[in-house]
Image 1 (cartoon, rainbow, N blue to C red):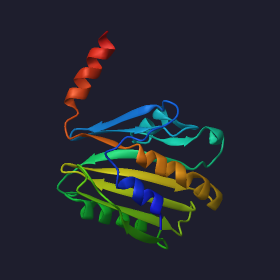
Image 2: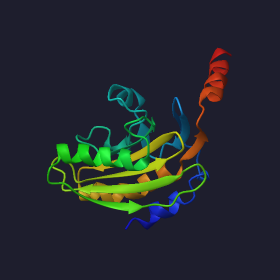
Image 3: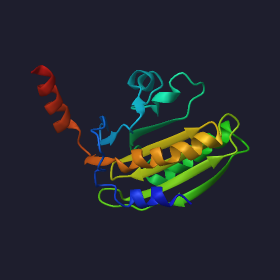
Image 4: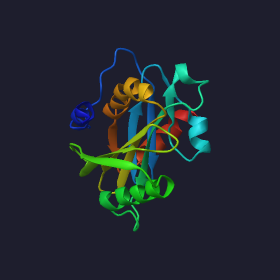
Length: 192
């Protein structure tokens, strides 16, 4: 079991302390805003993320030319009638994974929650045809579901990058359900 991830999740509202100043990434939607830090030695490829419909897309700088490369991302989804709570969101993901990978296996692990996080769980998917493993952490707030995903193509990357995924999740800082104050502040900063 991934005790390090579970321990990190119990302290979700705390910022992680790093020796150097990591790049802070602001991720928001209509009803959520949060930040995560780019892990040391990794890049957040924002152009690629935008092309594939994500808010972030992290990979190791050393793997820039590697194909395929292991990656992770963080994104938030505002709740909707189809995804009104964590259970319905997770069930939808399981259904999508089973549609793409009929032979998949998965383990569901409850994770700690605190602060604005009202429910949380992790799915660890294996027996995928095109990758070694994918782990997804789901965090539910009152109005959104925040997702962290970690995908690797071999066991070595999985073992090497698992602590980096824990670091990404540990850097999570939920800023609330209303991104408007931040966007107004950012607009003022860009205008100066």
